[in-house]
Image 1 (tube, rainbow, N blue to C red):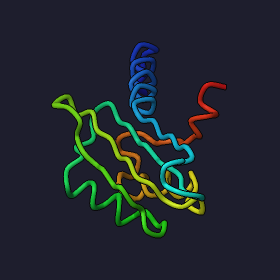
Image 2: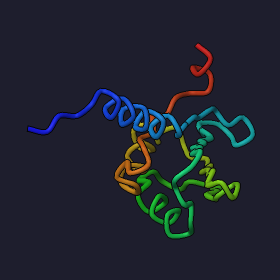
Image 3: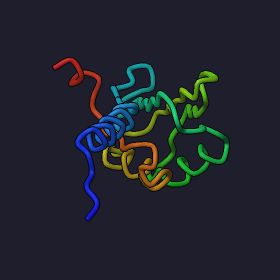
Length: 121
């Protein structure tokens, strides 16, 4: 029977925690967009190539009506990428998290979307 050292397990768990924590997803009421619109921001600090193909996959898997002011791009050479868009309040955190999962299968970690007003609490 092969044994796994505590150091190996610790490194694996730490790597996974780093991967998962590399993603943030926040939303806020978009005062400039009109009533009943939220502005969403997904930020990833490395590992995902926010290529046109990746972005198309995210938009295709976002099952919310008419997202507008859409941006999906690599912000820097280090792989830091972001997705920003506005959509009606009927589109909720679960919809966004599901679109991320369908586009990535959580290969780059999961996302958990929270209101910007709840972030500081």
